Image 1 (cartoon, rainbow, N blue to C red):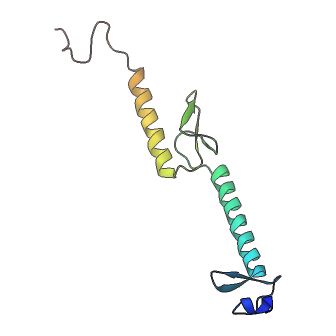
Image 2 (cartoon, helix red, strand yellow):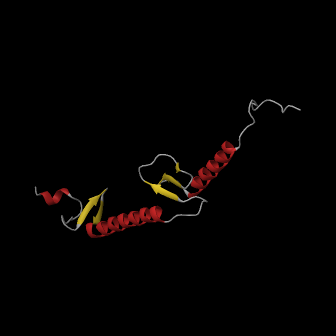
Image 3 (cartoon, rainbow, N blue to C red):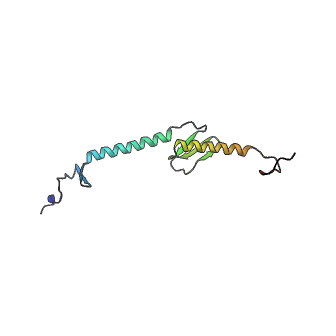
Length: 116
């Protein structure tokens, strides 16, 4: 028995692959994979260099796990964060930083009523 009888269809070794019982042309597969990789690279370049205005310059980094604020001048955020996540995190930072700058009167706790 020859090896050609093992396949139900004629499969050329260079131009066709048999994936899940369907012949796939390797040229089409190569073009599709190249297009997919180019799309991913273009998306990463877009995410790295397009900066929306959040009231604070924002830089996206691949090896970052949370937002880091550098001297209230720049924020570093993970690459996978959406614009909405960044907007909410920056807003929360400004809210918390403004609260911490308001000095409390000496000898007064949060629960105490003001002395008259």
